[in-house]
Length: 273
Image 1 (tube, rainbow, N blue to C red):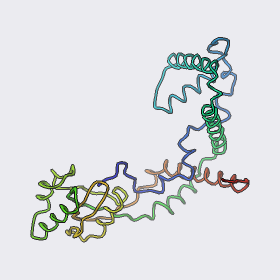
Image 2: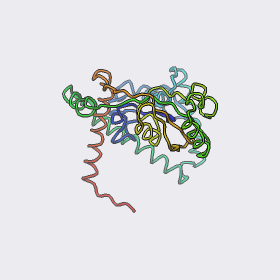
Image 3: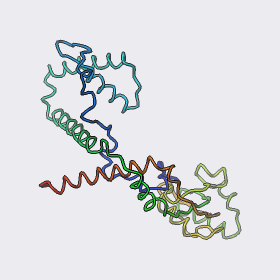
Image 4: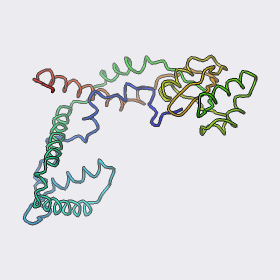
């Protein structure tokens, strides 16, 4: 069965040496630091809110997938300030869990600022990108599989289906009448897939079959018990350089982040308890 979130054929490009940081919005020291950032947009119970505060509020909304107007952002930042002031008045900032969360947020922001500054103005050059492509993508020779399956709830039911197949039963007909999976109505057809698009036990079983053969032993996954028929295989050419340029850039930047963090680790005195 397909995973809930299939991987792409280039797994290496999906991995990050420091994904915790990579998913955060990039913040640089120069952002909103000009004179315009000091422009006052509101005063709430004596507390001044500036254009810089508004920009930070809008960025937070954007990271959540929200597109808001200036008027909506202004209303939102004022409302938040009112609630914040009320929380301070009640001493909520003194609660241990709140103080810990505030401390955590500060560290996250500062870590992202440091990473943003480290990456700022240092994009990977063409030679680096081509080298990465040649070593990690261009040489890949993957295979796709075309298969069908019959999904059963129990091992006993799967073994019974295999017995029927051994006696000459038609795979597609058995899939339509017995499979509990969504592909049953299509004769169990799964179409073409790469190994990374399936759970490991399913992919391994399919890859171990000869064309036209089915599994003689039921294959168990979290979805149930499978009888798998391998219909065909084909070689897959790696994607072209231009098609993965952006992902290569991200991968190289994540490599730099990883090296940066490792350098800090090497210099640090760390004690875990």
